[in-house]
Length: 207
Ligand SMILES: Nc1ncnc2c1ncn2[C@@H]1O[C@H](COP(=O)(O)OS(=O)(=O)O)[C@@H](OP(=O)(O)O)[C@H]1O
Ligand SMILES: Nc1ncnc2c1ncn2[C@@H]1O[C@H](COP(=O)(O)OP(=O)(O)O)[C@@H](O)[C@H]1O
Image (cartoon, rainbow, N blue to C red):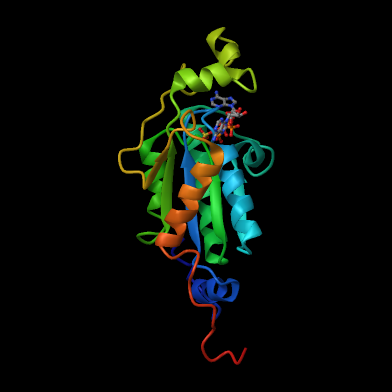
């Protein structure tokens, strides 16, 4: 690595964000399987998209079909999964996007490693805190039933740990309230931290 020097290009993250009329951030949804990460992140992305914002949603199930198709669910493989996702999310934020991600991301160390890739305030951890009992009763993919029967090894919450975040920016339990209220709460948060209402002018660009 010592022979590789960072090349600073003239178009930077601030310019790309300003062109899109937004301040780029990463919204990191973490929680048990079935807690509602994909549903919440998907509904928030739709609301942002419909308001004209430029977004991208990285979803665990989808990323594991391509970029991370070689990885399983040991703690080492999850670490590598989240390392790759963190780096991809960083590039996407650098491109000026509002990035959303939906990964179980079961350990504090993994989540903090991704957080450390970003300046203060740009990584927003959303703990989807729906209790295990509710996630298990939902079981939309039948995975909990299989895990209980021992047919899936290392299943989060059953035979593999989930470490509850200690300092998430937001916590949402999807067994309480409705999706619309939860999405409105997220939008209000993004508005309060000025992701949604930055100046749109690019100084000196003549446009
Ligand atoms: N052993 C085991 N444990 C947990 N989850 C499992 C497992 N095997 C398969 N699945 C399915 O994979 C989805 C989780 O992938 P992630 O990339 O989000 O996991 S991780 O962040 O690397 O821990 C997860 O998707 P979600 O239900 O959307 O969370 C499951 O459908
Ligand atoms: N906000 C919500 N309110 C009520 N039920 C929800 C909500 N979000 C998800 N669900 C239910 O939970 C199930 C799992 O949601 P999903 O988004 O796939 O979770 P995850 O991505 O965390 O695995 C869905 O099929 C749905 O029935």
